[in-house]
Image (cartoon, rainbow, N blue to C red; front, side, top):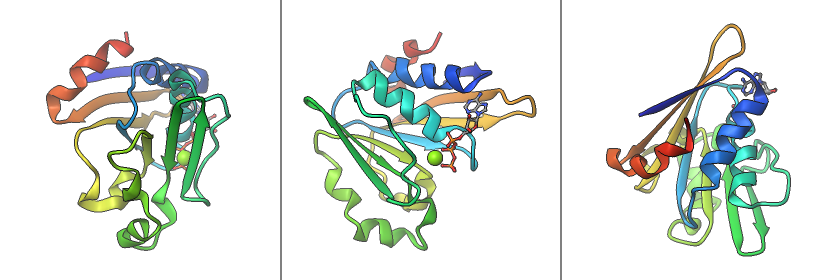
Length: 152
Ligand SMILES: Nc1ncnc2c1ncn2[C@@H]1O[C@H](COP(=O)(O)OP(=O)(O)OP(=O)(O)O)[C@@H](O)[C@H]1O
Ligand SMILES: [Mg+2]
């Protein structure tokens, strides 16, 4: 497991950028963390690093935001406001599994057991001084090895 301390929003974004530059089409990235932890901030950097030219915004209301820049394709999910896990199934998020889109998922715990493996998981925890602690893990556990060098 790799842990990184990010004292400012810009350092959290930079951590996302560094990881994003190493990602491949079709990968699944889960972003865990409380309300306001910095999941969307991290996703903005991730998208930049992956080569998405548009500014990423929170999909809290749309549930799914989709971005394309050249051959780069990213979908950003936020099922926080879903009443029940099956609703995410109804809106078709599983259609993206196995495709070319980088899948970035906030509040993945709302999706129950339906999250496809392998995935990378970033867990963001805020401390009182505003610093975020970012933990990078994966399922299967060894999958993360290739990506750990993204963070010093
Ligand atoms: N070190 C930090 N890293 C990231 N964000 C920070 C940091 N310090 C302060 N912030 C602020 O915390 C907020 C994080 O908001 P963000 O929308 O990224 O969180 P979120 O986890 O996506 O929330 P939600 O659960 O509502 O989707 C931003 O306003 C950001 O400026
Ligand atoms: Mg968010």
